[in-house]
Image 1 (cartoon, rainbow, N blue to C red):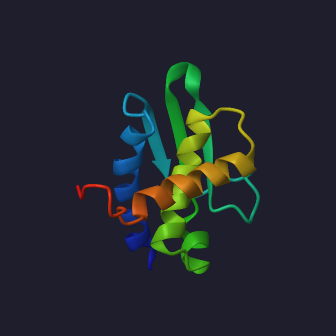
Image 2 (cartoon, one colour):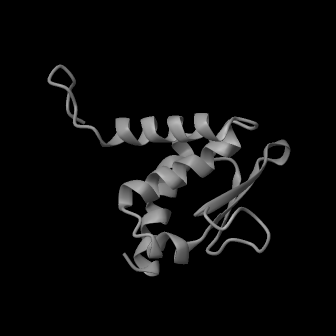
Length: 118
């Protein structure tokens, strides 16, 4: 996936997950590079939430994500993870990773036999 494809996938995941996580009324700003001095070199994205004013800024390091060969699923989990920082302020990274993984897993799993198809 090149950087333009990555942007397109991130935008699509944001369009789904922002309202799903209750952030539709928030100001969500996206940066396509990691700001200098923010996050460690190994992070693909960082989130700077300001819940008191319903604002969140998320920076995606597109170069890092494409160089590491992020799949669409990894990209979606990264988007959800960063948005969760605005929802679960002060939550641990482990908890945020777990919740992001489970939410993406539930969205992507096929319905069970007893569930109606959408």
